[in-house]
Length: 113
Image 1: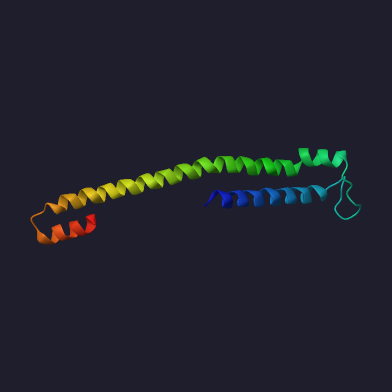
Image 2: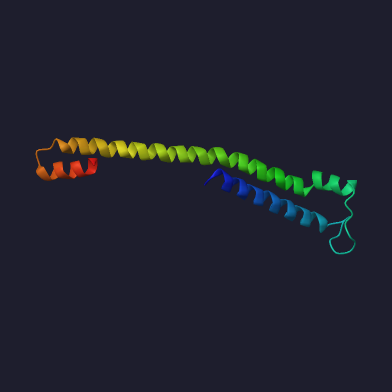
């Protein structure tokens, strides 16, 4: 996945978690969701910054930070395994290329190509 696609996925997750956190926060007192309009005052901003929306944001950031090294190490291990498998096949083909059997030599030459 490209870096732009990862950035888009992370942005969507952060925005969604903030919205869900704010929605859950406004469902409980002192700011009920459907009774009175919510006023964007200092108390509300303090509740948002120190409440569930910010906790959700930190959880998403922590998950992304933990996911990237794991994804990278898995990708590197997969590439190394592919190289190792290629080398094993090349060794086998080189060994078969020196065979006395014509069929073995032909198969080995096809494998090397």
